[in-house]
Length: 318
Image (cartoon, rainbow, N blue to C red; front, side, top):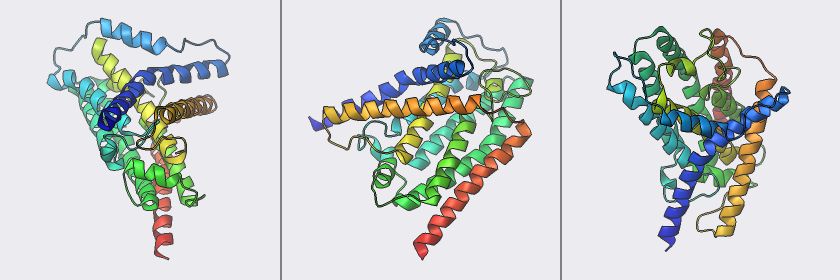
């Protein structure tokens, strides 16, 4: 009976992550519109957009290979699995043993790799520009992400998210400069990975600025729906990851009852709402930077992750 309950809770987490991803994107767009004194689209507009794209036929270029057709599903599957592994409202679930920080980074890297290949597959100029810019960003973002995760692993003594979350929730950890550095570095990486301002503007299609949109410009129909849904899932993933690691309170422990799961779900939704609101405020208060300034921006995250890791390593050896 306990195994059935654990599987049901794990399945509920996977479904919730998938179902809430468009809502979080719609919430961010709505808050940004309100902050700029516009009415903005409805909160459920992303659901309508995805449904409309799913009803349309996919138009594929003549020179596209099998990779162009398979990439949207690979990107969606890898992102969904990574998002479902992050502890949201409950910990110690059936697949918690596989919720490793390095595994999540590997899944995100796999999705990025196939999306970049698909952008170059057709041979258009926009696809090549977007793929090259994406690889340039990832060459800084991935090392910064790894160093940030190493800093967290040094504190928790493990790279499993359930262990990291439970250790950081204890009062013995306290306030640490290294964790503050890791938080800032992770936020910078999250902005870059989700193609948000100041790295990229998801609301424009200007060839001088776009990165993610350039890679998916040739997609349409259900293929584009899969990629858009994967992008929404990635935003939920990073918001949940930041909340799980740096705001770990309220996550129901393993074997908890339905009341604990309900409380954990409510707190998780509040964390997502707070993260989406802060993201909207940040994007409306800052301008997009030039593409050639992005390495400097991500270099800050890389240095903060390195300094946080070195500080923890030195303090442990004293």
